[in-house]
Image (tube, rainbow, N blue to C red; front, side, top):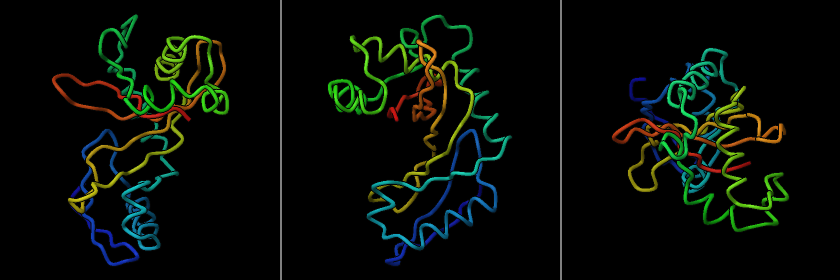
Length: 178
């Protein structure tokens, strides 16, 4: 996607350049620009902006990327193909009430991690992409976060927000549980 610009309600201009497994369609960009125009910069920096209506091709690209990264790994967490964010470890894993409220509670935190890995491994749909904005650079982050729907170890449906990260190798970062 070539560089485009969006302007917030309070007149702050952000550049949009994405380098991820999907590009925004013209309609998605127009919806993004319209949403940003109705919000102040502090809110889009804090929350990002949802891209809720993904095309089937975009959904398939995300699911294919998950499959490509995980491949035939029996333990993608141990193989460093999936990482659990500090947000999940610090803010979710120790909060029993939040885990219960979101349907993620297990007796052992490692069971929660197994559920997260299984949801990613058995992802069957992508509910939305979220574009995030850098707090000081007035540009979007180059990677989306994707809310995926998959299956936990016990067969229940679960949602995890993920991002594709490129370090020395490609991996999936589990950003948050929903």
